Length: 98
Image (cartoon, rainbow, N blue to C red):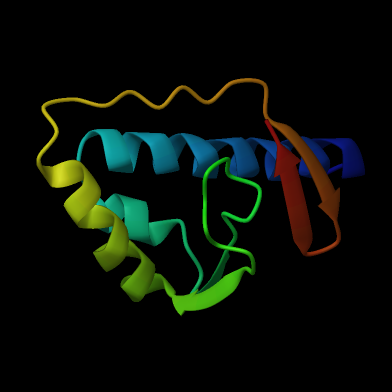
């Protein structure tokens, strides 16, 4: 496989991870939602307007899903729209802006 093909596959994998985030939360498939997170996640709402959180926090992936789940189970529907993922691949690491 060429470097360009490998890079394209990596970028597609990042985009699909983001799409699985939206699909998991919107369909309340919390196993799918959990599958996209590492065993430890850094959660940062410090830039969210109105948030009292000033520092990022580290949580277990399972703990994060347990915190999020009650926010969505009572909702009839949600629709997360994920557009224009711009992934940057650096070896075994990737970042993505949307």
